Image (cartoon, rainbow, N blue to C red; front, side):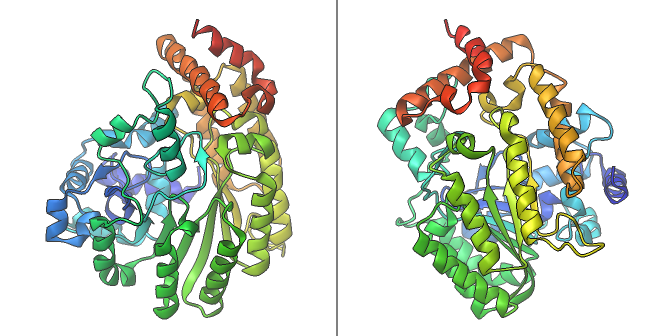
Length: 455
């Protein structure tokens, strides 16, 4: 374990073994349905309009969230944070994201403030991630109608998928208050955001725009124009994109980012994009993706806006294992082309790959795979370890994925999730004109195993 991360874990545990600064200073806002969560791992909850009417900061400081802060301060484990408890319990030396996040520059300076303030105080977050809209041109296999307008169109036409839980059932979204408000419609949560924005903006350390597909939302360009007009030299600005938008929108976006960077309007700019596998396997997972166009647009970013940061998000799932190393090879080639190669420089520099393990839907988790796929992950780890440009955090993330796979789910759960795997992807192929076996011929044996469970 990195000594700085070890030290942070000791400091956190000195308050409580469940203390995490992300619950105070990080927030993800899904304004398309009014949902909020602090840290991206727990499920979201809807901001009560009554609380919002009293203060726009209720987008972050809900009563529900304040109760979770109280639990963390008093040594009670918040059940919504199971992602980290699973990681920490899998092996004693595992570093969970509560440690990684609390160590970050947007969180660590506020350690004492969070430890000593009253649990029900309002907090101005320093890390804000916001989704204004679910408008999106992709239908990623693990996504949902609340985050993708394309997914919503499909489910409205064909209904939910025939898994045991009726995946992407709109009735469930209605019950969970997750149905999105269209970008063109009146949205009280978006209005509250822009009311809060002048107070929020000066205190931000990290601001990240996500979606949906952010480059398809009018609010993204409004934010970028605001930053050009109101420079914030201490801000790390981040934007997500699937890099599959029409060229004219990408050109407009790069032009605005170029102005922000050239004029020193922010401290750093960080671009996030996603790929969960290589080539046509990635295209199968992220329906709508053109892998070659995606890779070309990554290169175009560095050519138009040089010396910035790129994070490739890999939601590591059951379909990632067999081609991950080929994806990683492309990442290494990008590093060699665009990162600083001077003696003593960080070998990863401005390009890294982030690998959270996919938890939901469970039928796409690595946990559905048979034991020999764990051996393949061992091979991935060995290959990455042997690579001079590998980053420590990448190895930490791969190690915890492997650690989780060593504790298999019980047989009854495996039977259900593997049956769901087959039902989902068979229906996926029927609706979308794809072929699982054409995309993943190396998984034919596992496919047969799953199909037999549906008989």
